[in-house]
Length: 363
Image 1 (cartoon, rainbow, N blue to C red):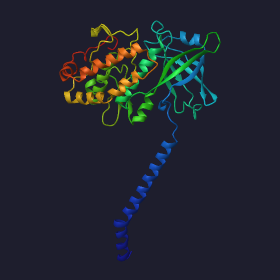
Image 2 (cartoon, rainbow, N blue to C red):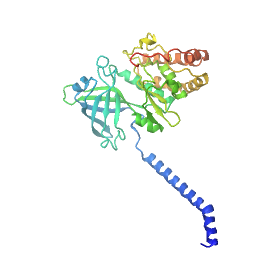
Image 3 (cartoon, rainbow, N blue to C red):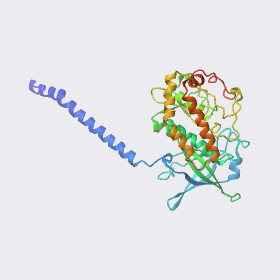
Image 4 (cartoon, helix red, strand yellow):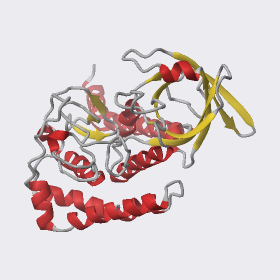
């Protein structure tokens, strides 16, 4: 090759090629971004994006279903029916009795359920992209469901890394026609895999991770939240009513769930663990790690920021009894009065002695 052509090729390689590659890269990135925007635009809203209550009917053999309280629950064929505009949509599915405490018929006359939806049949329906969903049912009292549902809404206001809940009026119909249909409050709980996708994190199923190894701000937020609602029924090391997620920076981002034993819910069956020496679940105790005051101050600032929304959830909900709303507002008043007194924060959160108490059954 002649020196002249070599020089031309060298100039092209050094000056022109990078520009062409950069242009191609920019065009490819722009194309990918357009496709992503189009996909997001065309994406059907999630079941948990709805700003209204759901209404649907579950038809199954109610006698067999409600008596299935053993350690190995059976799979029960069922049909879900809901109104889609002027038409009724029907989905075949299966149900399983789930839970621990609430599965026991001594504690709940109606058990919590796991709904298993057929992936192919839910396309282009209200339940699109859903597979297995927990259904938290009325147990004994309908209002308990609404109260627990609102606790999930409280935590949603604190963090996007939280389980979303969808309230529903569910009619339970007997497939044999031997029982009258019953309509009760219930709510569906977002699957942990969907929570992970929504927040670009991954589920961490490792146990025996101490609270001190969890993300400090996230762990402090969870612990103060559990204190606010009067809940001691949780454990990070044993993943009891806690799920951990990893985001590439930390492998221990805690997310709480299952709040029926919280003092703010006031379920009659809720009792504090005897190891904590509490007389009632309405009595608060902090069970999180001891963090520095700057960490707690960040958490407190967030709680103060969402305070109006917290109160509005209860004061604007007509499904709650007025006496319950009054008690709950007072319960929140006590919490906010405490967290805005530095001496009280230091005494309760920074010098607590209850974080290391092992509760029976979680050893």
